[in-house]
Length: 85
Image 1 (cartoon, helix red, strand yellow):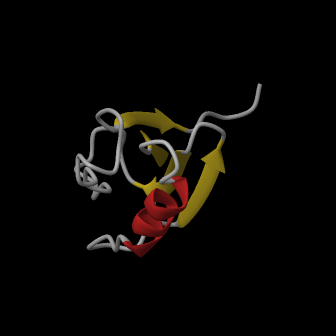
Image 2 (tube, helix red, strand yellow):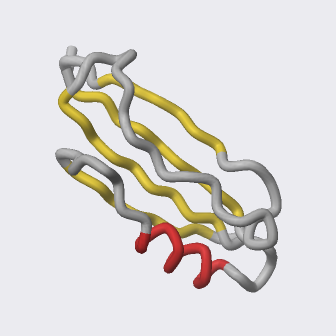
């Protein structure tokens, strides 16, 4: 089964590039199958990692950035892949 972990944060206004750099620098203790980083308006950063693991497996996740860098707590979601119908 493939599990995707999504991590999304919103930077303090004008600090989106700093948050993006911070997210890219974060190393995980294990290597995911795939990792992608995205940015969006309003200084938002999204990181998705894919893992070959059961849905409820303990998997490494990106930490919370310093509170001075973000406007709110990080949002996190977990999804499992499904076969195409």
